[in-house]
Image 1 (cartoon, rainbow, N blue to C red):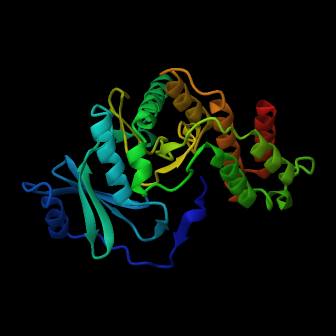
Image 2 (cartoon, rainbow, N blue to C red):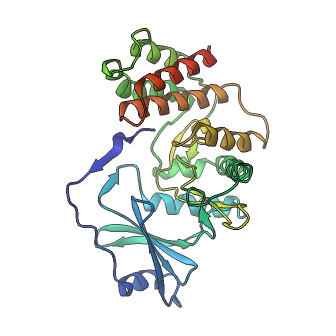
Length: 309
């Protein structure tokens, strides 16, 4: 849930594959592939080669490697989703392998544009996020046994693991916050940790999570703003389902994802507790890495603790 598994490398080689290599890899699964029509590097961690406008070759870039990121894992999950819920709006995997030691994944291209790069009226944008939240609920609803038995997905093995996950995450983030200018003396990090761990529910089995179904991974029709699909499952892991209808960018966006998620039916009694604990970890992360004023993060954390109480 945090960036602890990021391994930064100084000045690694990050070559763009030539068209001949891209087509060779893609043609193993799409024999009539013809033209590399675009190269998309907006994802940061991955590079995507668009072939004939309908197929993509995704490769992991070496400048920022995560231990839990795996294109083989993403291929397995997408294949399972295609069989379990064929109308789910996610890419369809066509094949995967390695080229010179680097993983690659060939899959169908998601039409439309990432929400983060689209200007929409607030109500239209909210509707797209709610539709994305509904799709996340469908991802969680598929049979989890093949996913857990695959050994590809790190994370929680059972409901009782959640307090430990909360404690481990906050145990890394909170200790140094008290030393930051603006953090209130009355909000002792160790007390935040204790209250959060004590509140963690143990009533819900873990599921495989997307991990960040936010605006960069939600695709929409750029003309109408209608939700068309969800991409990028490479960081998938197992934990409480409430951690998924949430974005690392905006509380409002998180609330819209949640609204779409809950419209599908009743939730377990601990769901909203876990959702708020996810927000608390997000606030602590922002403060720890300097992405938000510590005083503002502390005020937000205090409000979340009050809601949990």
